Amino acid sequence: MKLTLKQKELATKRLWQLQEMFTDVDGIVLASIGGLQLTSTLPNSPSTQRLTAASTALLLLGEHVLSEWSDDQIEGVWVKVKGSEPPRYAVLYPVGNSALLIVIRHIEVTPLPHHAEMELKDTTRYLQHLLEGDFP
Image (tube, rainbow, N blue to C red):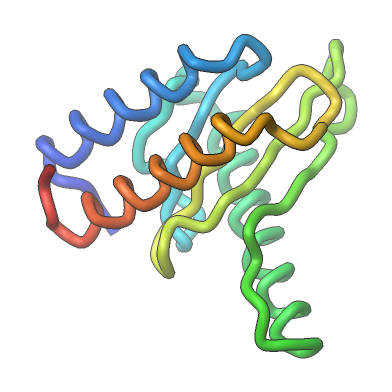
C-alpha cells in the first residue's frame, strides 16, 4: 500500500493534531498491514521501521489468537518497549483491515480519559476513510 501525496499530507496533519492533544505521546506512526511506515510524526529511521514492522506482526498475531477464541475484534494492543529510558509504551490500534496506528507513550499505559478514547476512534475512522480514498 502506498499513499498518494494528498493522502499522506492529510494523514500526517491528522497524526500531528492527535499528538498535540496528549502530553504523554512521543510519536505516532501510521503503518500498512505489510509492516511499512506510511507516515509518521517520528523521524524516518531504521529504529522507527523496526518498531513499525514488529508492531504490525504483534497486532496480526493478536488478531489471529483472538479469532481462535472468539468472534471479538481487537480494539488495541499495549506493548512495553524494552530498553528505552524512560520506559515507553507502544499502543497499537487497527485502522480498518489495511493499516494500524502506533502511538508511542512515555508513561505507563493507563486507560485513556473518555475524550481521548473518542478522539482516537475518530482518528482511526478518519484514517480508514482516507486510505479507502474518501477525502474529507
